[in-house]
Image 1 (cartoon, rainbow, N blue to C red):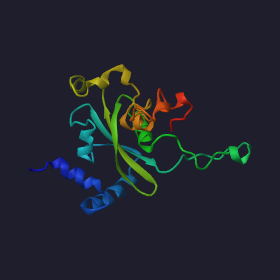
Image 2: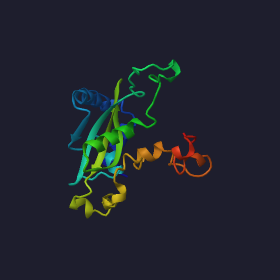
Image 3: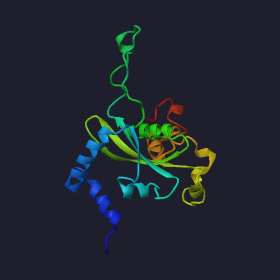
Length: 196
């Protein structure tokens, strides 16, 4: 049986450091480093992944590439005095994934759009790049799309900030059910952060 075009893309992205994709990614990253931290792009880099996550090539859908620093939080040293244990500069994280941070930054830039989903497209020694799929809830093409018009409802406002995207659900420990997940519901903070 003949394989689909998307299956070949997916197979190549299983090992992005090998084959022709490795050389292509090397060239892309050189261009991406010169761009801004949030760049709107014409079409997705990983078409198979984007379509899996709900992307369609139609009006009302926007894709943005977002770069976020790697590693923990970049904290400034306190100017006022405190004992060394409480200084809190190194080894602190934001308690959320870099993918979630990318979604939130894209959502802040495009305030009239809502984050549908996002996916990883590359990283180097100092930063990671994710592509974020954003949807315009007021666009007639989206309102009339049976697959996407659910996002037009007001209860989906601020999805990225409330942890309702796929990456947000994973980060809040909501992917699993049953034994072992007692401390993740109703939320991690609702159980004194015992669930993470």
